[in-house]
Image (cartoon, rainbow, N blue to C red; front, side, top):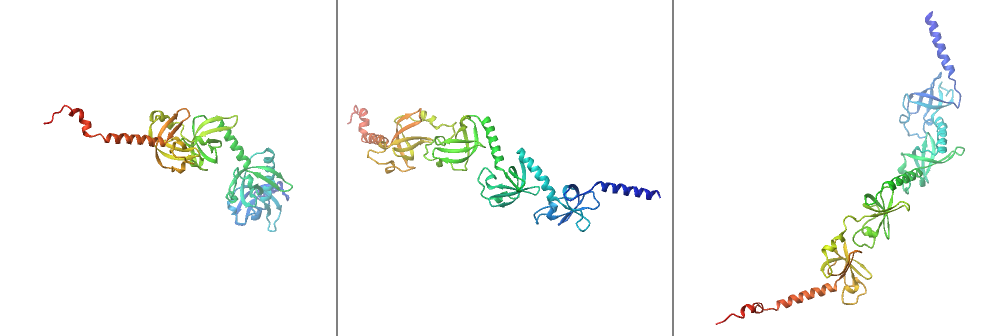
Length: 389
């Protein structure tokens, strides 16, 4: 008798518990996952009967594996669709529950301008589609990155940090941007660089642009100019002779102007100045060998030591009248030159090819004259007192 009374009391307790949990269509409640199959998920919603969620109320993608989305014992939010699906179960929807909660969260993110993460599922014309709790978010191609994106499909399957730029619940229109976040990060990185960079230090960088007067190098968020004169100790006419876009280079910080946001860099090794050797190695009237490196309208440059070039004016190439240096010389040709002037303060040397030839002729003439001297001439002083029989 006492057992029957206890059973009745337990039944009443259980009934009261279920009566306390009333459900209505459209309610969003929490449930615990009991079982996951290929086509549906069973959920304990603390009601007379369990809830069931069809696959299409969990994901819009037919080929998606439900086990990759939901696991047994997961606690999830669901919406009541029907109190009886015809088989004694409560019909539920996870997509609709997530959508309502997700919209509330997205509106708050939009109003506070916080960053959020979305999963990109597909590439469409003009951009990509990302999802947040089943809610469709459009990211235009122009807002995917700071740089131009050629292949939108490279973002499919990736989770991106974005910021919502347009939110219209009535039109179900939500637009986001990844570019604004990248731009802010780049600006913050640039500000930090301006504060830490020091004159004279070495930095690793990448050549971003080639212009007539030099090359721009990015040193990790900060772009500086390497003037054409600072690309090499040798004279060059085009920056492409030394660097190409995309090259990784080591640069020296020459000058910093934070107020004007300008950075001056050098690729040539500023610690090894080949012109420092000129004073000890060369002097005016020396005749040396050099290599023809380039032509200009008024003459030719000849390198007489690595990084040290001198100008041979057209009038110093030959005694003949020439229209241009290439009439007589060839690039890469090895020639004798005479140093006729050295300007140490401006790192300039004036050379002469014709005078070097004249010096060589004088030397040869001197040798020829010496070769005409006989043995008798050389020994005449020693033989003058010698008596022959």
